[in-house]
Length: 61
Image 1 (cartoon, rainbow, N blue to C red):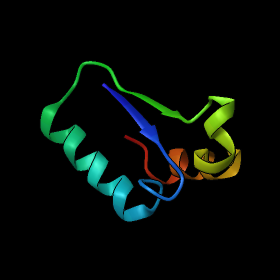
Image 2 (tube, helix red, strand yellow; image 1 turned 90 degrees about the vertical axis):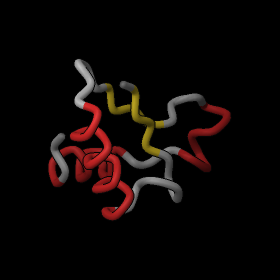
Image 3 (cartoon, rainbow, N blue to C red; image 1 turned 90 degrees about the horizontal axis):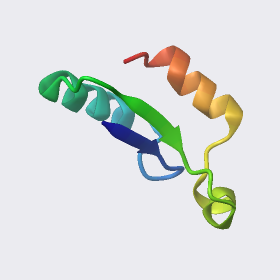
């Protein structure tokens, strides 16, 4: 299962919790959490390194 974190769409605590709940429900064998890395979209839709770390540490899956 691939989950992409996008700034302004699913990067707040409520959205992250919803994602976690879905993951717990479907129990995928593998989870990849990513963020927008394409340079064309990174500036507008990419989250900062700090926010990515915060999400990873505050909301471990």
